Image 1: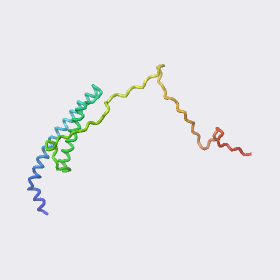
Image 2: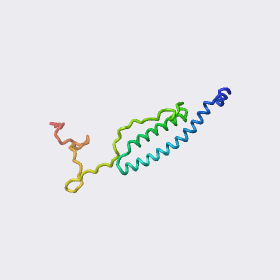
Image 3: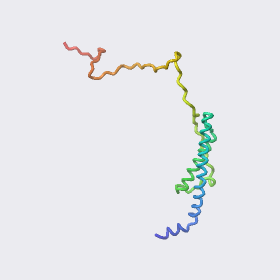
Image 4: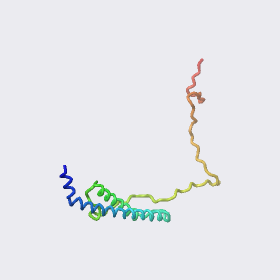
Length: 141
């Protein structure tokens, strides 16, 4: 039983992986800071222009994909090293409607608030109440 543990302790590939893990962990902290900055810039752009930057959204998405690859490598869920050992992840642009405020409802011409139209619905009757519409009435002699 001691032999597998001893071979892992002397395995140079495992120690090299530890170095890569430390480096990727540090770079992931920089990526988190970049995502925070992108988020703030996007907020300001939406605040001023009512729409987000497509380029920043795409860049933020690709950073998110890269950090996912990093975290999978760090947790041994994957043996593949992320960028720069692979291509930079590309995010397909999703069609996202621009952020805008809801339109106010139009006021009536008289200046009064309009009420929704009444629905033509027959009033409900309970089974104990007799119906007055003549249907189902049975007269006994």
